[in-house]
Image 1 (tube, one colour):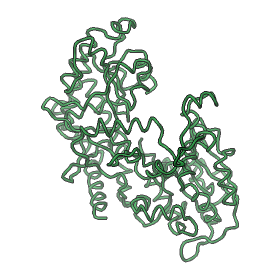
Image 2 (tube, helix red, strand yellow):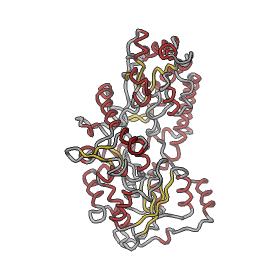
Image 3 (cartoon, rainbow, N blue to C red):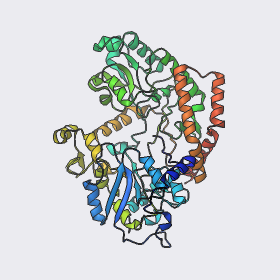
Image 4 (cartoon, one colour):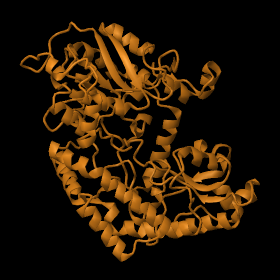
Length: 554
C-alpha cells in the first residue's frame, strides 16, 4: 500500500489551528529528564494512555485477554483509544495540538514521520532502552538479526519505533530456499474447461492468450458453457495496478512486471546492480500499447479501472470470467474453481518473459512510538517486550490460545482453528474470528516461529507451495531492490516531496494509454519530460541509488 504521509506544510498549520482550543494532556516542555545514557529512570508511572489502530471487526482492546495478561505481568494498566476509521486525522490533530498520549500504536508512521517527530522531540529515542535488562526478548532478536536493527535505525542513529514484520516465506514450509510470500504478488489463472471445449491448449504466450480470450468472447462461453445470460462473458477481468488482482503479471512478456505497492511503483534492480524506473523504458511503452489493443477489442473488462476486489470476485463466482489474477483459485472462482488452472508466465511478441520479483513489506518501525510525555518509558517497554516471543505474537496476530489455537501437535506446535470448527463454535469463519482478536502494533513474526510455535495458515501454506513449486521455477532473475534501505533526512524530504506526484502521474498515464491508446512519439517524450521536470524522477532515482549503495556497503 502507499506510504501514509501525515500532515505537513499548510495542512499541518491548519491542524494546529484546529487543535488550538484543545487542552493538552502533556507537552514536550513537560518531558521527563533522561540520564546521561538517554534513559528516563523513573518507574513510578503505571497507568498509560495509547492511541492507535484496530481492525474494522475488532471490538477494541479493553477486554482483550492476551493484552490484559501482559499488562498484569508488567504491573501496568493501559487506557486504549483505538479506531479503524479517521485514525490519521485524529493522530494529526493530537500531535499538532500537543495533546499527546503516552504512545501511538498501530498507526503506520513512515520513516519520514518518525525522523521528523524524533527530531522535534515528539517521539523519544528507544535505542537506549533496548537492553537485556529492560527488553531482553527484543534485544536478543536484534543481536541475532542485525538487519532488523539496521532497518529501524534512522539516519540520525536513533530508533523511534519498535520493529514489526512478518517473515512468512518458503523456509517456513520446509523449502530449501527462503522466498517471501510476496515475491510474486499475482498468480494468473484461466478457465481450462472453456479451453477444452474450444479445442485450445493452455496458452504459453501472450499471442496464444489473445486467441483464447477472443474465442471466449466470440463464443460467449459464460452463456454457452454455464448457461448464464447471453452476453455475460468477460474474457479477462482484473483490477488496475492492484496488489494481487491486477493486470501486471502479463507485462512479463515485455521483460518486467511493475508491481504496485513498491518503491515508486516500478523501481527495478537489474541483475548487474543498476537501478531504473521501468515506467520510462521503451519496453513499458510497448506493453501499454500492446494491451490497449486487447482493451479495444473488448477482451479486458471495461470496469477494470474502477471495480473493487469484491466486485471482481462476484463476477468470477458467477462464472462470467475466463482469465483473472488472485492468489487462490478456490477463493476467487468459488463453485467454478475446478474448471480453472494457473497460467504460466507468458512469453511476449519477441519471446521475452521475465517476472520482476519483490520482497514484500520489509521491516516496519512505525507501529509503536513512545512520546515525550511518557513519565516511565521503562514500564511501558517492558510490557511491549512481551510481544517479542513466538507464542505471544501468534496470539496477537490471530487470537488467543483456547479460541483461535486449540490443539498442539506432537512437537508442541499450535494448530489454528479451521473454518468448519470456527463456524460450529462461533458462527463465523476463521478469518472473521482473526479479525475480531487481531491487535495492530509492533508484531514481529520470525520465520522460525512457524516451526517452533504455530503452524502457518493452510491458505498461506498453499500459496507458498504454489509460489515455490510452480511460479519461481519460471523466474530467471531474483534481483530485488531491498525495501529496508535507510534514507537520510534530506533523502526522505526528497521522497516526501516527489513520490506521490510521481506515482500519480505514472498510474494516470498508464490507465489512459491502456484505455484510449498511445502514447504517440510526442506524448511519450512529453511524459518523460514531465516526470523529470515536475515529478522529480531524476532526483528520486539518485536518492534510491545512493541508499542502495550504502546498503550494499553495509
